[in-house]
Length: 280
Image 1 (cartoon, one colour):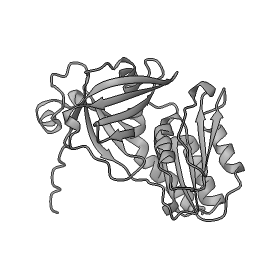
Image 2 (tube, rainbow, N blue to C red; image 1 turned 135 degrees about the vertical axis):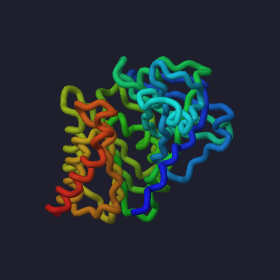
Image 3 (cartoon, rainbow, N blue to C red; image 1 turned 60 degrees about the vertical axis):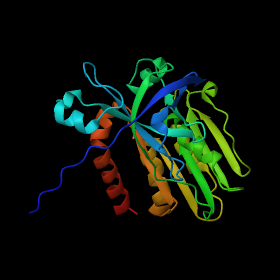
Image 4 (cartoon, rainbow, N blue to C red; image 1 turned 90 degrees about the vertical axis):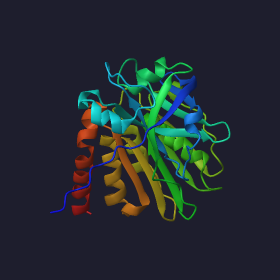
């Protein structure tokens, strides 16, 4: 059997913090800039993302990280940790890249970093990637998500085809977490307040109660893995929507930190697909 070629380390890019902005009590926008973004470009998706790289404590290397060299010269425990975040906006004229972070005190890695970020702070990232865009040929659009999916949903709403019929459901903690989104005609944005209910319960109920418009739907459902699984089952089994019309992903999992979730996410998604396809 032929040996597999060695996996090459992705090339990292560098930038620095220009400014930060408190969007809501738990959402902070970090705007990046610098010469490192000279070749940065998007490719037409509305869910573009980058992978931010964070050096562990004690790591002695500088931004932008040389991933290949680090993997050769440092033990794995000193390799950078990555976190994936949606590109909220990109202005090629000013080379300003905006990324929104959900922040809950000292919980997590990227959130606390965003809360402390100051102008001039260096940043290393990989990307961008992406895979979803609203198609003008769709009969109508369905966008569903919690705070973690809010940046991608907001970016999608702002780029919706003219007069596209669109139902948007966004679940946040309460009214203080709502944001202004420039929604074109045809887009109906519904803010759902979680309160003391489990994450995604309000979203699942709203989607199940929705009277679907005529025509084929293109759906984007992202957020906590538990409710994403429930809504996926409803769309596939109860509504009979084909997989090619769905963009569905569990960004995070209640009760698991990011590293633990990422270690099982691929298999979890595959298991969900197997379970639901065998009952379709």
